[in-house]
Image 1 (cartoon, helix red, strand yellow):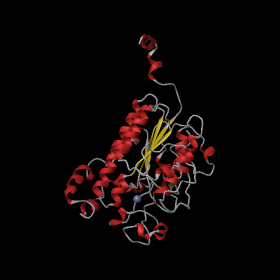
Image 2 (tube, helix red, strand yellow):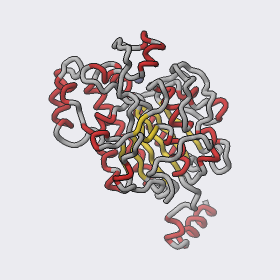
Image 3 (tube, protein in one colour):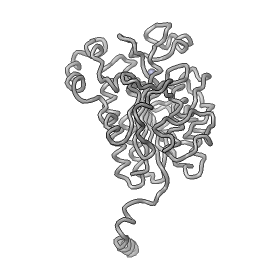
Length: 356
Ligand SMILES: [Zn+2]
């Protein structure tokens, strides 16, 4: 008791500035993915035809959806607020922006592999629980000094331990029993708690999945609603980081998705996958279309933090699309790491992250 009082007294004598911030410990990263969330719904807001179609929006929900988002604020207000705060929101094809996956499948495991390893692996053709043969940037960091034991993953899908290859990588995934399907709110709560309590943690990846689940069910109102809830949860996570001296001012947030969804009018939005993916496993799809689901290779991304800088709009219209592969090097660059040391063959960072 005595010693603690003396320490408290000593702390009071320290100049205010010295106590305000924890010692510099290097840059930090929060990566969040929202499974199968279309750029169309992010940038255009609710699709009026899908809201009007009782097959996809229960008539009881139509008015609520219309009142909430059809004419008013975006479904994802936090993500849309980022550019005004010095961040980026990219992938609006209506404005000439372009970012897409380069893996040939256009579904989850190939997408998460691409974004976490910096290159597509055409040999990954299923979502089966196979330990990833490729090394993610999370695994690479976890074996580096300054990051070892400071990388965590919280996901709502029980394939993540395999994608991250938790056994080989040593990156803890979830802290839930294997096979458990925690809800998004609970997953985010665990991530929040870890961020608050684990002062050593520097890299946090939260993988959310409700958007894809509701889309496959063909429930457009619930799909929009989960986008909106995810946006809220991400905003709360960002606020938590900004309130913590260990994270504030040195954390970059990246939000993106593993794949898009079908862009054709009608029911295609419920599905995703290329013609090649469809051909491999037609029974996996509710809609039988040998063309697959064009548009589901199209993605979007958002970011904010010291690792991100604005780029003149003109240079954001590339001759070719930016790619999902660029996220890994972007994340490493935001952390102040040399992405070429991770994998010289990985795709280069997106321009928002490259050289200052
Ligand atoms: Zn899916």
